[in-house]
Length: 217
Length: 83
Image (cartoon, rainbow over the protein chains, first blue to last red):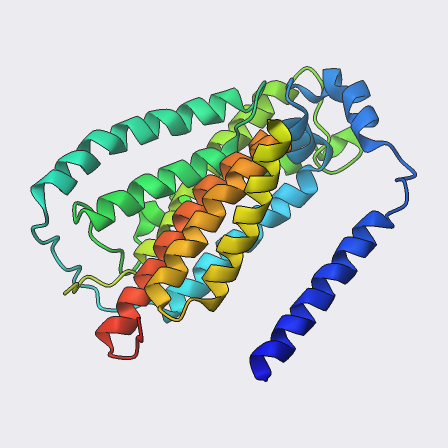
């Protein structure tokens, strides 16, 4: 009975969503055309990166702030014991695989970061690959879970947000927030993305490593 | 050919989403969630959005799946898991 009601409600919601999607009116502003028209001034050649870090850089700034705050909140509920448990022995095959894969993943992350300027890629994807490498190392018991962040880790976590804020403060004279001078835009975006990739990698890895419990059966 | 692939992808997406929600064993539900994330990656790629596909594969399927598996392990150690 309950299951049938839930199924019925879900089906009704799905139908309504589909109907709403079909009823969508044509957008009054053609944003894709505007991005294509201004891509020359953005400093990068890939439209997604241009929107994320130049035209709507404000959104990305707030996004990284939200992620940082989420991690700060998480450290409040994570364990507080300072003695980090030593990584114990695990399967040698898994450890060897993780040792081989981790440097390659770091290389892929750097490539994604660099490729973001002219093709799909960018800081978020690079950060996610870095975090995945850290999670893999943790699962292979080569990297102990984090207990409380040290000074280096804190700076690393805040680096992306700080670089973003510094750039925003330095270019405030341009008239609008995060409006870069066109000649400098490419370099500034790369600097911001590099900081973002490091911070996002540490933040996403922290979401796993602060919560991960060492005593596995 | 492309239409057949797209229809198959859409059907598999719906099926894996339903299995992730309805599977009685938690472990199976988590695995189906990861499968759903990977299929979603394919769907984004088919829709011509490779940026979102990359993010979905890395964050949606990879990191979230790892977090869910970790949570499942923690639940089991406390004797509360049913899977």
